Amino acid sequence: MLFPASHRNRGLLTNFGPPELAMHKHEYVYYQDGADMNIFTKVTGLAQQTSKLGSVLQRAFYGSSGRVTLFEQRNFAGRRLDLSSDCQKLSDKNFPERCNSVQVESGAWIGYEHDNFRGRQYLWDMSERGEYNCHDKWCAQVDHISSVRGIKQDNNPPRAQLFEKAGFSGKKTDVQDDIPNLMTRHSLNRAASIRVLGGAWVVYQEPNYRGPHYILEKRDFNNSSDWGSQNSTIGSMRRVRFN
Image (spheres, rainbow, N blue to C red):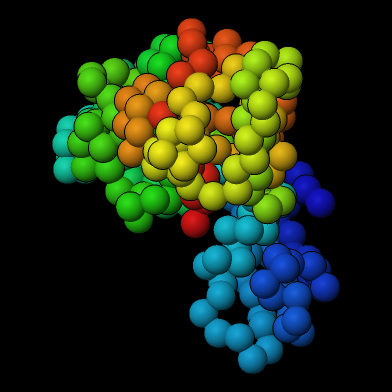
């Protein structure tokens, strides 16, 4: 429930929360002041969950993907830009289209080569503690980033189906965990169509999570152009990590 920005509101929600806290007796008290929401948690017998729970509830209220910070220079130095929502054009935020390091506080994000979420994709998620001290860490050859968007989190068990041919035909391969080398695991080095049934995934053109890569959220991808690739080569794939 949202309230006018000019009012300060206090509300009480009961029996609402993430599954991992469902067995606990709890209540949530939230305050909204302008565009900001602070959420406080009272959990019987469960301490130190406020930060995590607040993040979950904030996403439920606002649909936010989390928070990420972009830095102009390597090693988290220079001009910085904090984002908690999609940004179609970084230059509109007075941030140079140069990004050499990134810190992910929560969620998972895609950096794009061009504005309006176009061009090469670069994944920033919570793997490696969400810290990328240089653009090499996200498999980029240059430091150019023009737009950023959050990845929608899907709470279904991670699962994807890879098909030999476009239109979900031919040999089918089911995937439920990270695969550093598809050829070694499944004698497979390409997929012409992919169906994501749970979670979010990133497919890499090279083994061991290297090279150009593409983020696949829950939906059907009828052919490789649907996920932004000019060919169907896949060397490795893994789950996107949100925490």
